[in-house]
Amino acid sequence: MNRFVLAILLSGIIISPFIITDTFAQDPKDLAVTIYNSNLGVVKDVRTFDLPKGRSDIKINDVAQLIDATSVKIKFDGEVIEQNYQYDLVSLDKILDRYIDKDIQLLGDKGDLLEGTLLSVYGSQIVLKKKDGGLLMLPDASKYRISVSALPEGLITKPTLLCLFETKKAGKQDVELAYQTAGMNWHAEYVATLDKDDKIMDLNAWVSIQNNSGVTYPNAKLKLIAGDVNRVQNTVRARTYDGAAMMMAEKAVPQFQESALFEYHSYALQRPTTLANNETKQISLFENNNIKVTKKYTFDPDQYADKGKVAVTIEFDNKESNNMGVPMPKGKVRIYKPDGKTLEFIGEDQIDHTPKDEKVTLKIGNAFDIVGSEINTDNVQITNKVHEYSYKLTLKNRKAEDVVVEVKKVLGSNWDVKKKSMDYEKVDASTILFKVSVPAGSEKEVTYTVRYTEL
Image (cartoon, one colour):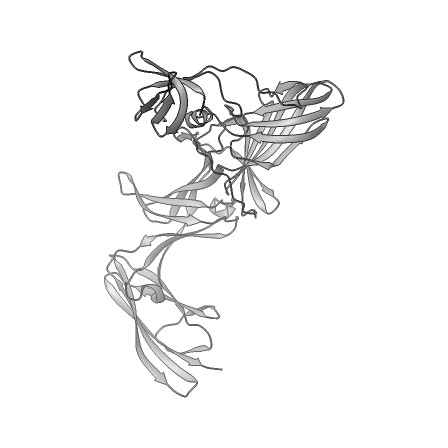
């Protein structure tokens, strides 16, 4: 049915019994959109109306198709008596459903005309009752255009908020509309470039904004909220969208002003922007260069003891003294490195919301030329409540340079390291850390014995 070309002659006006005057909204006088990274947008929309004295029915078009009608707040010099959200939009299927038992016309490619009363519609199959009482059954009506006399009552072309206003005096005034809508989201994306020695990094941050709320917001004041906002989860009415998503990228120049908002962070764009429906827009958040980083090799014997994987991570301090010191919204970080001619992708990681002055750790991948392993070499029962376990940790460095591998071992509780071939650091009550230096092209073994005492 979606292949049909629909010809509709519109006639008639649907009138509410409350209407004294029927006033449609003008274009927004002032429009602001705040987007959260939790499928939520908050729209603030100011429009000017010429309101009569007494009761009037106000139709506000171009509201979000995924509006939460229970969140609508209207501010003006008067009283809102009733409000209704109408979202039963025009479509071919809905029009034909409402024309059951009514007359329609089918126009063929060669000019042939079929007329009759519509009895049934199923996919592209149509059954008509002809004027002489006979039945016309079309198993494939996709070659026909369909003509009906009017738009059925109850269908609208745009989502509309219908409000019953009560005003004490006539005249023009601004009406401020605020509401929440689903279908809006944003997230941060970071692009990091390491230098040839893996000691300095440049970092570009972008925000990607998705608008699938069902309406376009022209020349809007845009604000993004970063943080974990608590929300009550309700069942959201699902609706479909027409058109393909577009990707729009804006110039890579910092354009947001960051500020604290309650326990979150707000990023206000310093100019108006248009958020088109079914569009993903990218805007530069910040660009910082010459950030000092530390590359680390880490081995988790409890996770990778049988696979030998040694992880590679990059760490940096998010401090002003390190050319950073900015709140970092959660998002994906992609890391690149030059190979002498071009930039090559070397890994990516996801960060959570990170305040300034905190350390950021990015896992790049696993080292190809470094292998780790650990085996349990001995178990001794000293008494019924005292046991000793001995381990041998082996690290192999096949690289042409020396490396330091950090090995974290979770020991649990009531432990005491009785023997060790090298010193360790106590990370917390249950974890120790070995920092093992492994020369180029060689292997290094670490042995230790742990005694556990049952209390």
